[in-house]
Amino acid sequence: MPLSSKLFKKGVAAVMAAAFGAGLGSVTPAFAASGALVKPATLIIDRSLPRAQADAQILAARRYDTFWTNGDESLARTALSTGFMDRTLPPRRPQGIAGPLAASKVVHAAVPDIHCDVTQMIVAGDRVVSHLHFTGHFTGGFKGVKGNGQAVDFIATDIYRVADGRIVENWHLEDNLTFLQQLGVVAR
Image (cartoon, rainbow, N blue to C red; front, side):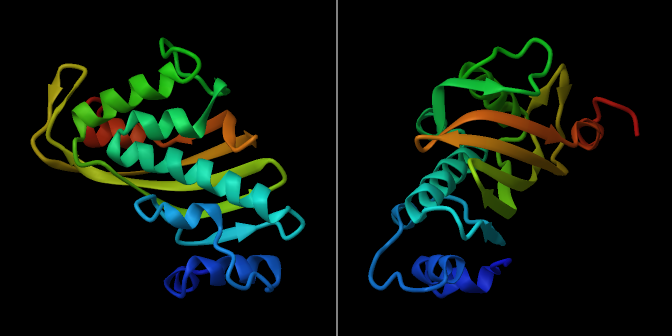
C-alpha cells in the first residue's frame, strides 16, 4: 500500500503504523531521529518484514541517498557495509566504498548545489529500491567543460541489498545520457 507524503507530515510514527497495520503506540522508529535525512515522497513497505529490519533498511537507504546531496562521507561510510559491492560499476571507478566517495567528489565538483530527492522507496525482503531525482546547476567543471549555470535534472534508480543495517550491494541505473547532455559533454 503506497504511503503518500501527507503521512510523513503527520509524523513518522503514523507512517510506520500505517505500514505495519497500527499498534506502534509511542514507539519511535530508529530513523525518526535523523530529520536531516531525505524523506521519500512515497514509501512502500512489505508488511511481513519485522519492524526493526524495515527501520534499519530505511535508515541505511536514507543515509546513502542523503550522501548524494551533501557529499558527507560519514553518511556513506555509515550506510555502506565494509564489503560493499557496486554491481553496476562504471569503468575506471574503484569497487567498494571508495567508488561512491570518488563519484560524489566528481559530481559535486561539477554541480555543487546538486540535490537528490527520493520520489519513492520500496522496502521488501532484504532490498530497498530508491527512485531518485537529481537537480542542480552546472557551475563547476566536468571532463574539461566549464559550466555556465545550466540546469541539471535527471533520474536514477538504486536497488540496495541490506544486511545488518548496511547496504551490502547496489545496482545503480542512472540516466547518464541526459546528465551528460545537460552538461554539454555529449551532443543532444
